[in-house]
Image 1 (cartoon, rainbow, N blue to C red):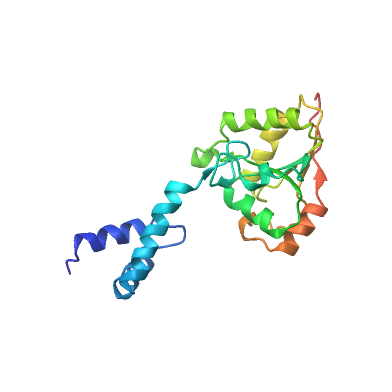
Image 2: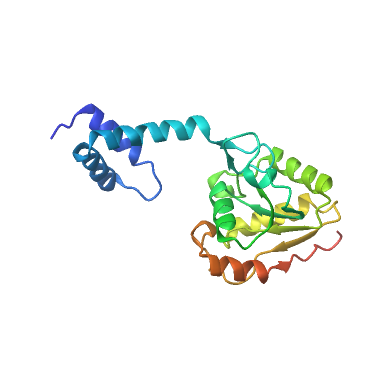
Amino acid sequence: MSLPGSFDELTGLLGRFPGVGQKTARRMVFFLLSSDPAWVSALAESISNLRERVRSCSECGNISTGDLCGVCMDQSRDRKSICVVESQEDCVAMEQSGVFGGCYHVLGGRCSPLEDEDVPAESLDRLRRRIVEYGTTEVILALNPRIEGDMTAFLLQDSLKELAVKITRLSYGLPVGGSIGYADRVTLHIALESRREMEKEEGD
């Protein structure tokens, strides 16, 4: 059966969402066709506004509507402690859990040779600058507990070895292979409170 080109086009676009296959995308398109036109228009406008108004904070990399996000502009935040996360989604999860009162740093990537992905050098440079400027004494690595998270942690440890800062990593509470973005508040609280200092490599 030949479907309208616009139908197939939207199905293909929705199918790019994480966890959405072709059948689910097709159901979503049929849902849109049967929905209130005013709601569909509001949805389209909201998506457009998202792309136009939301950007990355120039300081930490978190989502923001201005040059700096709310956390970076908040002078009451503890700048002696920086929590490093892989993505903006992880940053939002940590902040909404309410278990951390310091600042954040979004890497914008991770070490994953199989996926040809790496941490941007500019992000590492910005992190080192912030540690020095803030007088940060502890960097907390809130990285996902999987092999890519381990590789990213070792990269960060090597990148920060010249700085006089303690490097810790979230401990138990997070399941191996899990994702910080999907962890609940209690799990994140336990992992943060039980964080452990990373051992320095011999020769450092």
